Image (cartoon, rainbow, N blue to C red; front, side, top):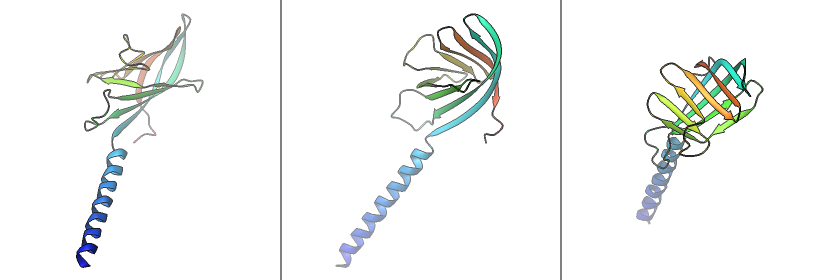
Length: 137
């Protein structure tokens, strides 16, 4: 009888530890970075000053089930949010698009100069210099 209780205890502890490690693994599988950008927007060939927000969610090195490096969000001054499902982190430039292997990419962010250029849709492009959002850790 004691052997059965010990097996139950060991099995329960194993599943509890595995569940804890899984939750820990999932919660820390991405690194989020937020940026505030000021620059210009071009709508049908006309430039005007604007500001926009960028959010990058980059997968950590141990994420083996994804063949891309993360995803990106862009929020324009009028509150529209655009999602880009594919992020390619080449070290210096982060290229992103809403479809895989799209050449040229919809957006590009330089991690050296902190400049971004995003072609959101036909005839609508935003570009600017970015800085990490002050309300972000």
